[in-house]
Image (cartoon, rainbow, N blue to C red; front, side, top):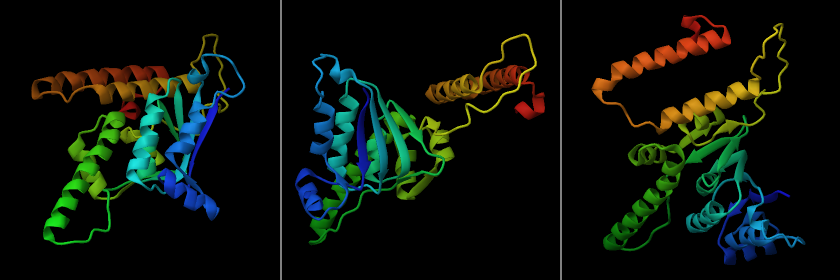
Length: 251
């Protein structure tokens, strides 16, 4: 049976969660997530911790350190973790999303990332100290994005400084998500051939694998640019033949 974690409402620490519960406001806390992860139900199966886990996210974010706890628990979970971004995964909620082994995003959803903020008070020394703390928190947040996307931390910090809103397409292109939900993999595919035609789902998986492989490669040196360009052109030509497109359409 698949376990389900709902990241809905604000992400708060355990004590603040009691306040939200008293007033009937939606929130999620580390202990609430831990209860679900540690619940093996009525089964005596020792493999309960290997159950599939789905994490549905629609949250504006919240407490950075509470989100870090949840992120860490999800990353440590023994079973496969699938994240479904259903609405907005903003701020700390976007960090939790990065814990997924596979991240799906609704075509109407978005991911929003930005730098951490607080409401400081004190003298100049106090403010400088708090600024240093916030810079460290930003780097920690960027590390979660970096682990998923493979992007340089400096580039991620700049996206955070710009308060970047990522559409579903942007999220997949930049590596924040793996797949757009409800992609028309099951669309009607009329075929008139005696040979086997690859289904759309297989084609989409191949394209995702190619994209991930390209993301994992290190940046080429100047000497490799020509060879890589020729390799990309050859690959595009092969794909053009496979999909029945001419060379211009493939490029």
